[in-house]
Length: 193
Image (cartoon, rainbow, N blue to C red):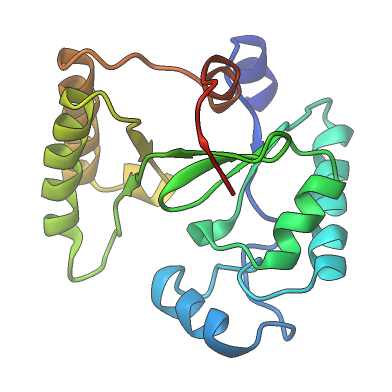
């Protein structure tokens, strides 16, 4: 399935390795991980060397099936400082956070929030309304709009409907669909990391 998507000009991005927190997570970053990623933020509080091992494993798994990922999105969008260094050393071109796309080669930061759902949480309905409204407003202002989905989101009809409405509102407001790689290539202005 992924090979078909890659052949269709979709962008393949590595999204963690085990998607869980290991014993190397410590301190306030681990607390933030629990609040934001609910136990899935494996890159939130790890060392450069631990991140490098997981990135190599992820790249190797993709290599085995003939896929290459130029970018990386950490579970929960949470990166330790060591992870950012490991990403650069591992040859990734970009990564994403809750609030921006980071061009790892030039140091540019392209601001734009990631709008996402939180299935099953008490804020599910509110998050769906916020996604629909925020995406339209950002698109009307000419800003970067990123809509993030997990497979669990698609199991909820109300979230699917909200996501499709958000996409439609963005397109109606003049936004254009693109990949992170294409976005980085076309943007020449940004602030440093």
